[in-house]
Image 1: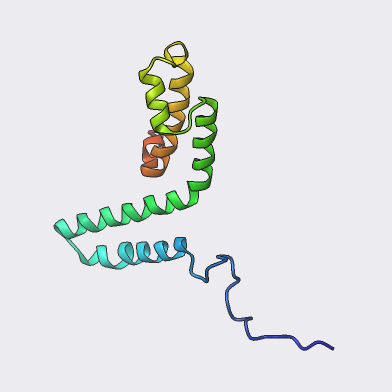
Image 2 (image 1 turned 180 degrees about the vertical axis):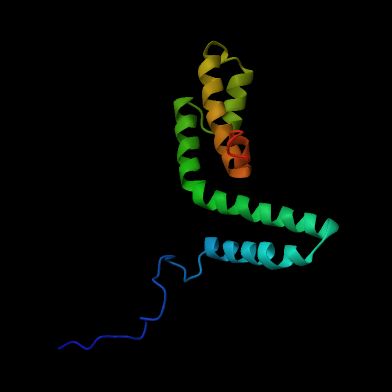
Length: 133
């Protein structure tokens, strides 16, 4: 009979391969929790304001980590649909008039990119009035 190896039973499951735990997300959340539940409560004035900026920055980093793959796929799909390689190529083609007869489609595609960026940088832009209360 094979002997069971119990040496790692107490460890959390390895979900952050190839790295060990904690993951980048877990580290950011830990720092964010420490700042919001301890440091900010003991701060006032300008320091409290700066700490809120730091917490918000960590929130943006978390959203970037969680949305990066989806946003990269969206960006690549849109660039392909517009038949351009990147932002610089798109800018040159817009300036040369290659999209003059396709402005509605161009606007729709660019709005999709901007919306994805805003959802990461400040998702509050997408809250309805009833969500804010």
